[in-house]
Image (cartoon, rainbow, N blue to C red; front, side, top):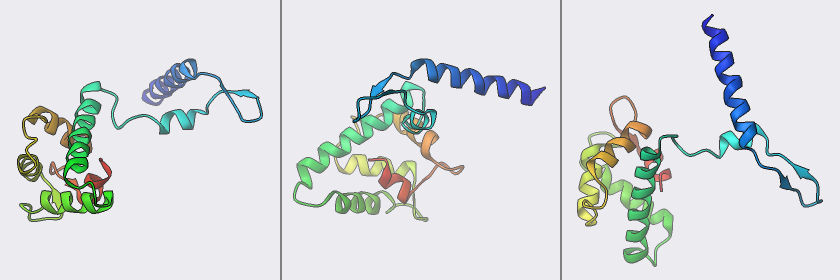
Length: 141
């Protein structure tokens, strides 16, 4: 019974995605519809707008800081510096809530990203301990 309900749920999600899919033109002029796999892969981290908004807000703040203070450096160098600063207060190689707050305070952006936004980000991307791995943190922005 439970598998039947989950199958119905999956079918209804596929139908809703297929109804949203818009036709597109290929380079040869043929009209097609994007595959379900491409639609699913292109979705954001989470569906609730609050969580996506929180990640986007963090990305915006960090990108503005990079453009202002690290304009001459490569973006990878900037990411490494942020990760190093964020894990400084952690005993592991993961970014914790405290490390993220310290990072935002150090760059002067603690008033632009609220604690609620940080909790949403850590809930979405973090592990069971409430930490984000250094690699995952660097891929956020």
